[in-house]
Structure formats: structure tokens, C-alpha cells
Image (cartoon, rainbow, N blue to C red; front, side):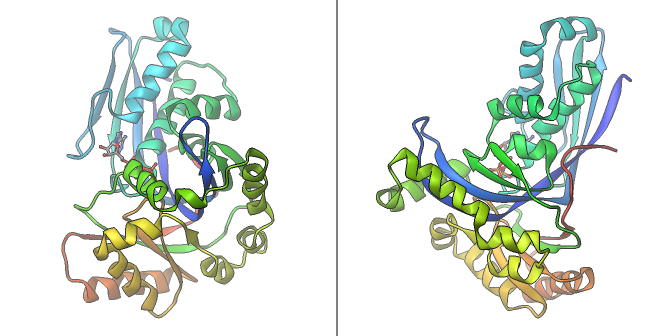
Length: 315
Ligand code: ATP
């Protein structure tokens, strides 16, 4: 095959706890991540005539140069596998963006994950999922999860994954102001400035705390497929810095939480997307309609999504 069409799903954070600092300056995290069917399309094809990497994307907020994480994923593959790069030539990547940008939904990371999976197929490398995830961790903390997707605990920087049973039939309403972007780096640095003195310092205690998530209430609820309990146990430490700094997001979250049929509400990652969990699709669609009426702002993007049991897939 000379080309592959891949589906690259977004993720939400059902749980995000900041535990402490790491020697590499990242935060030690304990997260529970969930893939959803709000997804980008990534087409990847060999371009035999050249060795170049070219990236196309119509979305005005998405760069097409080396600052695009998907571009960097292709560059990484070319460096790691120079013989295959020489044999198969350059790659053309076309991204069709459906996932809002800088939204806390891992849009860039899932595009990069799709490029790793796509080039592995194009160049017939036969890499295992864990080999692809190791490469993904070089690019960004969310990339390893995006490759396999589904439901998983993520610790360390977010790259150490333990799969959980897939969640069936969980429906989610997502809401984001189109022109509101929050930098992930800003959110974590502001958190460190405000809460750094409560961080766990000792390495053994850090590991112990990260492992505690495995036996926590959220994991128990996921194992039991108890959507109501999952919705009650949603948690995100970054809300403590993002919501006060962005009252528009706090208000949106409050309005979502008050809707009939909403079981729980939370901000995803570093925001500004907020999401609400509903018990069925009809209810989620009704919540979306109600929010549209309650906030008649054209800048507000609303989506209904469903939990997915997988990450990158060939379409
Ligand atoms: P995360 O949840 O992993 O922190 P995010 O969903 O908050 O990520 P992205 O959509 O990945 O954020 O975008 C973050 C920044 O990265 C944007 O400012 C965007 O310009 C840039 N970017 C680079 N590559 C991509 C890509 N392939 N898709 C979207 N944004 C990209």
C-alpha cells in the first residue's frame, strides 16, 4: 500500500491528579484517560520522488511546519529508520481536523500517534504497540496513550500506561469556546506556583501515591461499568488554576452541571473544554440543545461523543 487513512480519536481525562515534580522538570501525574469518537482524519502516503516530509492542514490554528507534532513524528521515524526512509521516500501527511485545537483533548498528540502508526504500516516496519509507544513518549506525554487508546491509567509524565476494561455506552457532551485556547505549559506552571509547596517530595512516596490510583474509587467504578459513579468521581487538579483565571469556562461548567440528565461535569486536561457525562445518547443530545439555547454564543462549539475502546485505527 502507498497510502493509509487513519482515524485519530481525541481523549478526555476522567481523572487528573498532580502529585509532584520529577527530576526531568515534568510533573508526576496520576491520570485516567478515555478515548472518544470525536476524531481527526490523518491520510499518510509515500511520495517516492522526494525524501521530504510534507504536511497539509486547512485549519487556521494548526501549523504545517516542524512545529506540528505530526510533522515531528514523521521526522522521528525518518531518523530512527533511515534505511526505510531511503527505500520508501518521503511522506505526505494530510490532517482533517475535527478535534478543537489547544482544547485539552490531545489533538496534536493523536495526530502524531496516527503518523507513527501510519509510517510503521507504509514502511512495513512491523513495530509492536509498545515499540510505537516508546517512540511516542519521545514526542509527548499523551502520544503513547493515543496509539492504543481505550480506557487506561497513565502515570509518570503520563506515558506509563495500564489498560483498564473498556467503557461501554458512555455518552459525553463537550463544550468549548472556539477562540479560547489555554496553553498546557501555562496551566501546569501556574499550578506549580500556587500548589508546589504541597507536592510530595520523596521518590518512594511519589511512586506510592501514583500507584494508589490503581485501587481508587474511579478504577473500581470503571471495572463495574458504573457510569453514575464514574461521573461522581471525576477529578482534575488543574481546575483549581484554570477556572479562576477563565470565568467563562467556570460558568460554562456550572451551566452544564445543572442540566437534567447530567451525571457529572469536569474540565478535560488543561482545558478549556468542559465535558458532561450522560447516561444515554438521547439525553446527551438534549443537553447539547439546552446548552445551545442557554448560551446563544456562536463561538461556543458543542459536540456529543461516545467512549471508544481503541486509539488509532485504519478507516
Ligand atoms: P493536550 O491535551 O495533549 O495538552 P491540546 O488538545 O490541549 O493538547 P493541541 O490541540 O494538541 O492541544 O494543540 C496545542 C498547540 O499545538 C496548538 O497551539 C497548536 O498550534 C499546536 N499544534 C501542533 N501540532 C498540532 C496538531 N497536529 N494539531 C493541533 N494542534 C497542533
